[in-house]
Length: 119
View 1 (cartoon, rainbow, N blue to C red):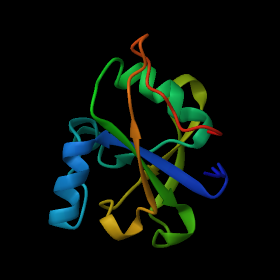
View 2: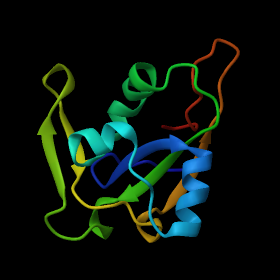
View 3: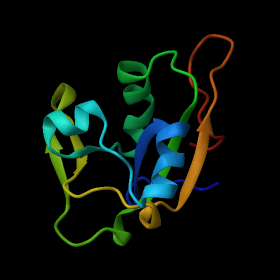
View 4: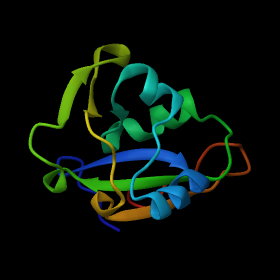
C-alpha cells in the first residue's frame, strides 16, 4: 500500500458511517463537520495526530483515502487550523465514488490506532 501525501487526503470516520455512505451515496457530516461548515480531512502526516486528538481509543474506525485529483475544482482548501498547520477542508459532501480505498484502523493493545504498514 503506497501512500502519497501530496496526492491524497484522508477522512477518519466510523465503519458504520462509511457503510451508511455506501447506501446514501455520501458520507454524513460529523458533528464537527456540521459545526464548521466543511468536511475535516487530514494529510498523511496529520492522520496520527488527528486520531490521537479526536478519536482516542475509539474502536470501529476506518481511514478513507481520497485522491485530491478526483475532487471537483475549488472544493478542497488548505486552511490553517491546529498548531498553525494547514489542514485540508472539503467544502462539499464527500461522495462515496471519490473514495479510492477504505482501511480499517484497529486499536492496538496500548489503545492506539494501528495505521497501515508504510503509512
